[in-house]
Image (cartoon, rainbow, N blue to C red; front, side):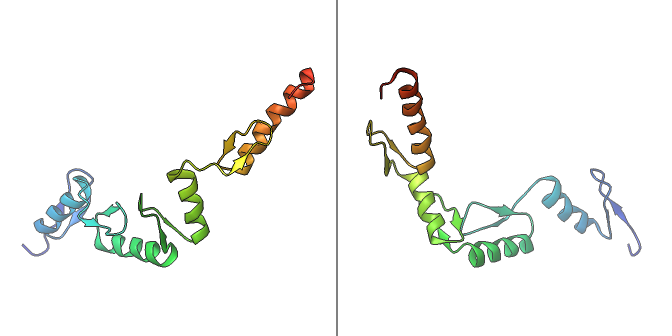
Length: 124
């Protein structure tokens, strides 16, 4: 009926038709996310949300990890991600005990343990 307003009893939103209310209930209150990204696991309630996501995903993060589908802005960020998350490689080696570390700061922190030990008892 023209001029009729339909109320959502869950949130109080007003709609001009019963079908608009039904669509609202399906997408908002049932948390349906029918719009799926083909690049990553993200899903959205509305098509424009997926479109906006895809623009960012493709335009701003063109380097994608083949193992977990996370995207990065630069090739170097992807390389670092692969080193830290998907390999056991430890390129930073302690010259005193041969312990290996993924990041330089981890090696530096480790070296402090040798320095403290040497300071305490004169040994390495």
